[in-house]
Length: 338
Image (cartoon, one colour):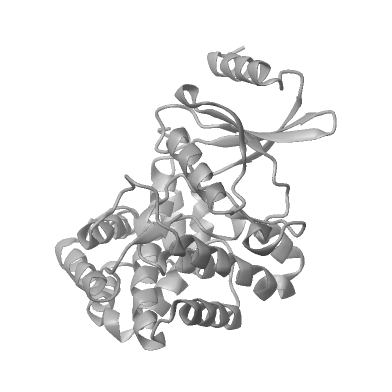
């Protein structure tokens, strides 16, 4: 038995789940993995988040408590050993939005409307203290992953980031640098669960929120509606934006620029992240999502507020053709660095 396996066995024993049947449930782009435990009729979920990774299990615990305090359906933490990165969580079931919509796409608006309402509910509340609050320059720097990883992997050259960062910073200052709200950052269909036995905003189970921080109101809406992993119908996107704008009392024209700028920032960062996951982590599967993210980026860059950034992106970021994506995949190591 490895040291990690022994730690998990000891943790579950102390928590009263030592005799539970265990089954792999999921993994993701981080080092985390999940198991479903079954003990008689009871179930729970083990989060195995090894120390030293990018995600902090303590941040997950704090954010889960905050969300539940607001009446939202984050999983209850049944037991935790934060020093070892082990948490035992309430099992919210298998009805992920992504899974339900794959079976029945016609339910998209039915599910996305309460998901938008969760964001509105969340943003009306005071955020927890001590959260990161990045400046526009920092958000633009994060989008530079598109140059550092995607463009580099595709061309072998890293473009000069100075004009790129300046153009995106200016757009963020002008259109997406207002009062902060709590954002969860990975708010999309694979991190949302449908809980029809609950009422109101509690019908939406929320997962993967440990990177929550302060940000702009439209950021999580973009995450939901411009999903890297699935296509959202244009009519649904438009209806959910209208729902959000009306509830917040926003000017639709002003919000359209806000949404496009945040959407461009997010898509650029994701392009770089997906290339990086291939080059460093040995995970080429994310490359198949690049064309969708590229399409989202182009739609956002078509907004007049992003004319300067669009010109720079057109000159520095190659179209993700099958040949380009194959070139990037060929650089994926057989033995990843982590």
